[in-house]
Length: 86
Image (cartoon, rainbow, N blue to C red; front, side, top):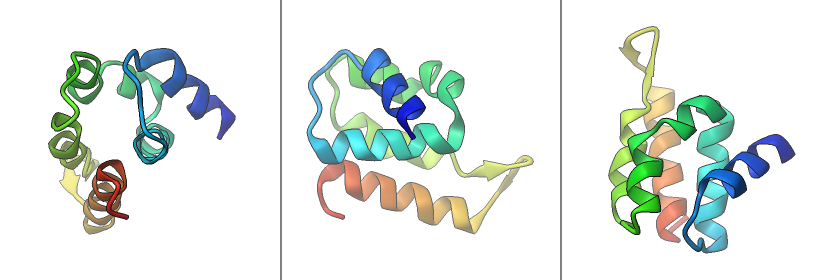
């Protein structure tokens, strides 16, 4: 977990609430630091768009090219956490 916390701390350039940080660490743990670093979610967040990540979480729901219900649920939970509604 510290590896993913460090990745989020290093790559995110805007202030985060604890719930936002936690959601991003969870996402990064699941998709990997390289994917997080190249993501539209990160780019938009670093531009100061705090609403965009909520929609971007839902783009990470595929495994082997197939939408997986478990990943859909996980991304929904992370989006809720990011909004502070978890």
